[in-house]
Length: 287
Image 1 (cartoon, rainbow, N blue to C red):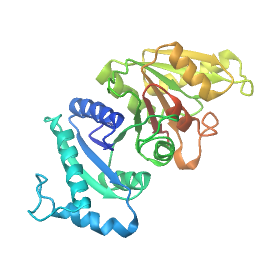
Image 2 (image 1 turned 45 degrees about the vertical axis):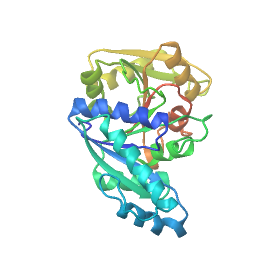
Image 3 (image 1 turned 90 degrees about the vertical axis):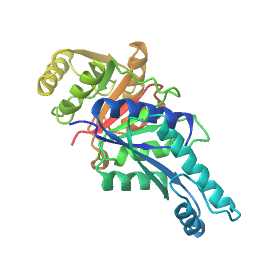
């Protein structure tokens, strides 16, 4: 498995540019391409006008000499911003898409049509305002995407996940984790820190937990990883606190998407962690 086709939803906010920077770094190392997706949420009554405006524009963004209406001006600016975003990464192959619809719905559509390996998207988290890709949109994508989702929180896009916390209850087999861990180890020399959160309602003898984690480690063929059992009030708070205290560069979580979370992911833990984390979060489907 590799990240050959990366989707970057871009709303021209600082964190969507940071997601693009991260995606470009990954694509460069994986010899991949990037699909830039800009979504314009317009009233249904105006959608046809926007589509016509997009068709009028040439590849270089030029229009006819006639007076340019507001919609056409908006579309020209969109094309210009997309072109400038691409030009920052001349060695990367880009596919450009401008669509009109709801954010999460169009992301699913592009993923299905383009055989996307990874979605890299910026998110300002629960407290952010004014950006497209915040809160509920991020959570909807995580919940429904069939491919891995990398949520970027750093405005600068300084992505270098040397220390990755993989949080799980380790009741599942290695599955896709066995395919994903080597990618990050190869690209960034990452060390994987296995983390099991113990809450008041999920107490288990430490030797039993350690044995299950070691079995998981064998299934993923990892030779160097750490085993961490951390007691906290809730899984979400425990993951975030452990990651902060141990200066993690990224949190990785496995889910079962629309089929429901495993016991550990009950209550949309992956979505909430991605929404509240201050560091990148990588979420993938275990099944």
